[in-house]
Length: 196
Picture 1 (tube, one colour):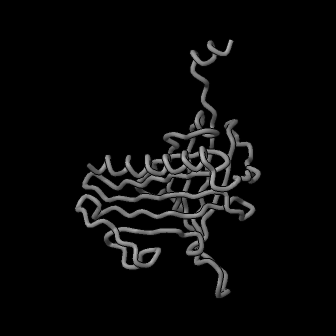
Picture 2: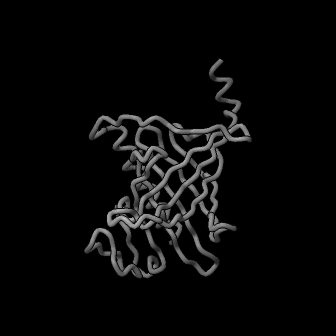
């Protein structure tokens, strides 16, 4: 039942992204990708989320102050230990380049944390994270699947919290940093044969 819920959330996001791609409400200008070459021959890309400014939605049965205010989380028992958040994501130049959904759930056999990143002009990534952070507070996950530009990529994504140091009134409390490492997969042999 829980897997069905998570699959439904992911499919709902994918369907909405697909509908926006097929019938764009606006002309989706592509922001320049800011990638660096990784030592393994792949590429690295960094995103961040300023908290609380970039938080679009946060919900869960145990959530005392949902965003937007008045959000009512379903009272279904299967969702009792599920928390979901939606954010705007920014590139290294602080430009908004897409949206991300982070879902966390507690289960008797361990915690589940997943990210779904959608960059409208590029595609989507689904990342399954390790339940426990590593040294330095970094949680690492693997890219499970992708669409469009990310369809033939594997790799990993690291997540960490960086507390804000500014004393300005409108400064963020901190930010979530996401560092993606992409590695290209070989195309399936049958696709290569069809192209010849």
